[in-house]
Image 1: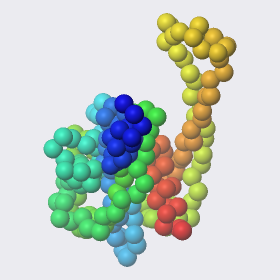
Image 2: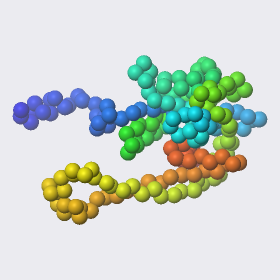
Image 3: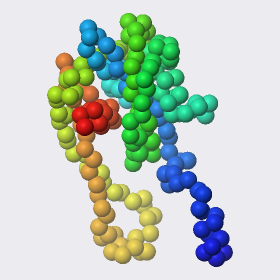
Image 4: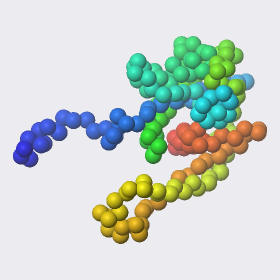
Length: 205
């Protein structure tokens, strides 16, 4: 195959994330609610019965399923299922930057307005409780930041003999920032805190 044919084959292709088909994709919704004329963000506390991350604080959301029309559809569907609201009570939804995780996940966050929060009925199989935090708190509060270092551990039969340096090869080991917000006894950290920090940065610009 010559160069002309190679270019013709690739010219109209739309780039995507390499290996995307192997990633799990999630839609996340950040609900803004009005309480006494003040904007709050609404959070969930995951049920202790959940297999993954029981008791963690998060936003509504979940994995994109085959019958979801889009990542947004997933985020709104999961919100409806988890906190018992009708999708029609959500308006003005806009996307934030998506996150590609080293752990095989792509997170698509959205933010919008949730009307009539008094009608929330949490699905107790997934959600222990919901609570809100004034948006102003996050605008005025910088998160605490801690480093998490990752270690490279090749499998037992890794072919060291085929790389420069062999077993003494100097791997580029990276560190990730873990963010923590503390509000009235609630600890908001991890991916949720990272999304909040990104959201706050955008609206402060």
